Every structure is written in C-alpha cells, then in structure tokens.
Image (tube, rainbow over all chains, first blue to last red; front, side, top):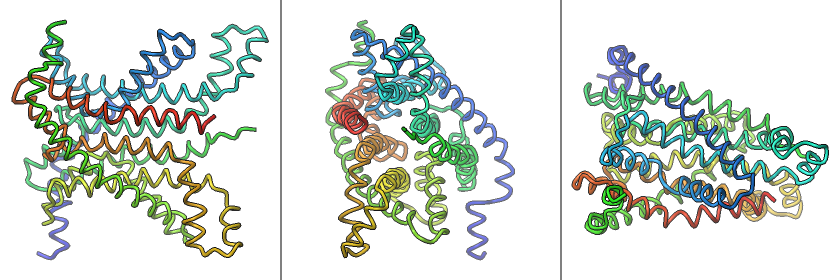
Length: 227
Length: 221
C-alpha cells in the first residue's frame, strides 16, 4: 500500500466515515444544545450580576467579586469533577448534561459580569448625570442611557469569551456527556482507527469556525470609536 | 452541614492525598514552564508573520489562527495523543500536552500580539526607521516593547487561562495536579482531594486574577 493510501486508510477511511457519521451528527446536536443553553443562561446571569453591582451596595458587591474571582481562577474541569462526583454523595443527583450546563454557565456568567461591569464603568459620569437631570429615574438612566453604551463596548470581548467557553463543552466527555468528542473517542476505540477523531475535529470546525470568523467581523464592526 | 463538610472538606482524606497532589503540582508547574514560553514565542512568531507584506502569507496566518481557535484544546490534545499513534507517531503524555497546547496557546497569544501591534501607530515604525534603525532594531526596540505594554493585561490574563488549561492534561493520564486529585478521589470515593486541588489553583491564581483586574482598570481608565 502506498503511503498516500495508508494515510487515507488511517485518517479518512470511507466506510468508517459512513458508519460513524450518524453518531458524530448526534454529538453535534448535543454540543449545539449545551452551547445554546450555556450562552443564554451564562450571559443573562452575568448581565444580572453586573446590574446588581451597579446599584453600589457593599453587601452585594463583595460576594459578586468573590464569585467572579473564583470562577476566573478555577479550571472548569475542576469544578465539573467536584460537582459531578460530589453532589450525589450529599443527596443531589444531577445528570451529566445538567452538571456541564451548570458549571459552564457559572463560568461564563463570571466573565460576562466582569465585561459588562467594565462597560458600565467606562460610560462617563456625565452620562449618568445628564440622564438623571432630564428627570429619568436611576433605573431608567441605567437601562436607556448607560446600558446601551456599555453593551456596545462589551460585545467584542464577550463574543471571544463566549466562544472560548462554549468550546469547553468538549470537557463534557470526561463525565460522559454524549457530545462530539465523546462520540468520536468512543467510535475510535471501537474501530481502532483514527478516522472518527478526524471526523470529530472536522465537526468542531464546522460548528465553531463560522462563529470565530463572525467574532472577527463583530470585533471590527463594534470597534469603539470615541469622539 | 456536617455531611457537606465530610463530603467536600474532609481534612483527613485531604491530608492523606496531600503528598500525591503536591507531586502533581510539581508536574503542573513543569507543564506551565514549558507551555507558557512556547506559546508566547509561537504567538509572537504568528503575529509577526501576520504582518507580512505578502497577502497570501497574511491570509495563511489568519486561517491557521482561526482554525486553532475553533478547535477545543481537549480535542487537539486527544487527537495528538490518541490519533497520531495511528500514523506511527507516538508521543509521551508530556510531549503530547506540549505540542497540543503550544498550538492552542500560540493562536490566542498571537491574537493578543496582533491587537498590540495595531495599537502602535505606523508613525512609530516610520520614525524609528528614519532615525537610521534597521527593520529588526525598529521592531525589537521600538514597536514590540510598546505593543507588549499596551496588551499586558491581556497577556497576563491569557497566561491564567494557560495555567487552567494544563488541568486538561489529566485526560491523557499526565500525572499533573488534577490527575493526582482525581486518582485520590476514585480511591476514597470522596471529592475532597479535588477540592484541595481547587484550593491550590485558587492560591496560585487568585492574586494574578486580582492583578489583571487592577491592570485592566488602570489602563482602561
């Protein structure tokens, strides 16, 4: 067998591609589901925390800062293992899908809070004062004046961070979530061939490459041009 | 409450697991010592290549970075560790981790350097060249220092991500800190060793997280 044929036989074996395509597609569906759930709950929670923090109450701010710092300092895999193996022993049994969703949401929420908060801080004080002096309440000023400006500043870093964290759905394979990587490694050990791993890698590229490229576009589109 | 403490903060189990975990910490630090400099150098290289005058070189660098950023690091690691042996290339867990994370972190550091270069005006380069510096001198003593200073918070923050990333090495049985802790967990049926490992990550990284917050606010303000 020529080296070219051997290469195809090892990494792109046609009959294996056909056999495992349904599994990989199934995995893609699971990855999309978790990623969607994580993005929605993570960003919503992060925005909520940033809004709470803008109220300026010390009792609220200290726990928020501690939560954010811890989520930024701890590897997500550590959190996943603690939640997955720890909670059943104290009577709370969560399916692995829910564990992955919970942990990644919390991590994304922490980073999103920091990004939204930095955005809110960057809006000049005069904007607050102008809003209040036209008769808007604190809440109205926050929602109609400050937040739209803050959100614009937050979009590029938030996009990058969201992509990085949704890619962590691959960590679900460690606790048996049947996402792409899990399907690929299972198929690889069944078939004794690297083709399913290549298929898994391609599946990630199909899902995430458009998002990465869109992220680039968003970065230039939303670039902050301050007058 | 008592149940929670014995489950997650079981001091006896923690003290038994401690020697194993501390040895794992040594390996974690060793991996960081290999991957961070490799990534910093690789990122700089890819960012410099991305400024090439030839369009196809620029596009090639951008495509490479995007592909690497679209690929979860765990997928890259498993591919290097479990896929390449089929092609006759069998790497040790440590080498697999270094190769996979070198590729992943180079892409991220590369993007940060690129932003840094863009933040240094072209006039700086022209001024440096017009005072008689060579291209190399202008780059190394005028442009790169300013670029690095402008993106320092991002470089440090990405380095935190790299340290956290090394925990994935447990998936290819490299005996780093999380692997050691998970081993102890499976022997004792108690997650306290992982909590201990988490505490060590916190002690290592929390000061750096605080530092990044402060750097971000100082440069942003």
